[in-house]
Amino acid sequence: MSTKEVADQWAQMCREGKNIECIEALYGENVTSKEMPGVPYGELVTGKQSVLEKSKQWLDNVVEFHSGDISDPIIADNHFTSKMSFDVTFKDRGRQQMEELCIFEVNDGKIVNEQFFYTM
Image (cartoon, rainbow, N blue to C red; front, side, top):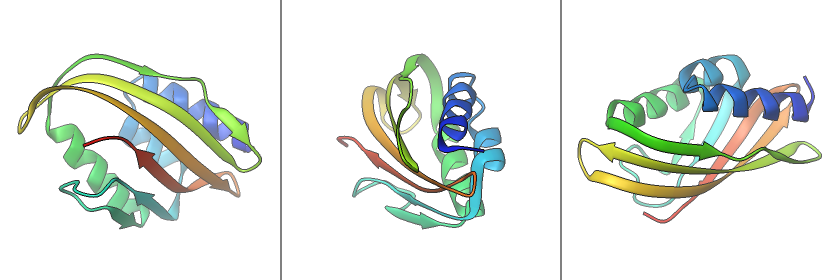
């Protein structure tokens, strides 16, 4: 798959709430995921299984999604970016509005690196 095909499929799956399925289908085995400092599940996670676990922890902490938006991806060579906005109630910190910028690197049709920028 091309970077555009991966990006479009990523966006569609995330919009449908298929986050775990997205990782299983689109991520490489040695993917790295970088979060902002202070997240409870670690700033840097390496390996598909660890990224899956991190995502499951985040989703398990959600009580309710009130609304959300994922922008259409912008592609540059083997990278793509998207803005995500959410209104979410968490078990441990209540209701929050979040905005984040997500940047992904694609190699051989798989996401091999992701990084998220947001304010904690």
